[in-house]
Length: 317
Image 1 (cartoon, rainbow, N blue to C red):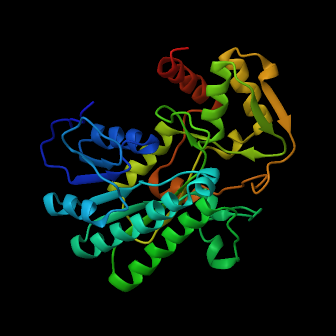
Image 2 (spheres, one colour):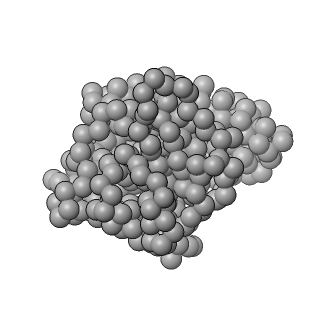
């Protein structure tokens, strides 16, 4: 549906969301629009909204055409190839989109001087097994564990470099376990859409033991991301995720999905730890709470219930 900003007494700044037809991009665009911002989107996917551009972020010519047509105060840069195994199977697309595409945005930022919110990932913390504060990489050598994580860290380094060289204004965010409506099933997606899709379709799925995660419902996540437009502090980096007390093991998550979907418990096939994947992620969200008012409201049971209801409609089950 086209995004029509509510009538405001003053004109709100224009915002561009790259990857605006994707999972987080769709939800974030709606949240920004609901606050009165005039939101434009671009994506490799087609869209009906007259403020949508169908482009490939890895093409400088296509991206340049957007900025020749329209100016923006803030750009939320979400366009990316997602996932560890996606990065292994389609590494050329991953590096073109996540690294070359980000370089294109940075070059355009040099010219047009918009503010940018760069979407990284908690995957950049790699094999670090202590509390993940935003400054960890400044203190400890970190080994990212897959091409996706490396590409996201490369994007962060590009941002840091451009901040110093060209004085551009960037905020980096590292989402942690975001899930919810508009995250469609793919074997490359996160554990929640995979579990839910398989459970609803009556298909077996693998559950790796020994892993524990914090998840954050997308409505909570996107409220915080939208707050950045109103409290933009150049140079900041934020972890954004659910409440620490909502952490759950992957085995418990599988049981919850089976319960809520009413699926046969025998669909879950348990195996040992997953290779090249951290067992536990301990993440500090205090900076986002303090500066962005991050305040997750939807716990994992309620979030999975909402996501399953959406998935039933989408997959007609």
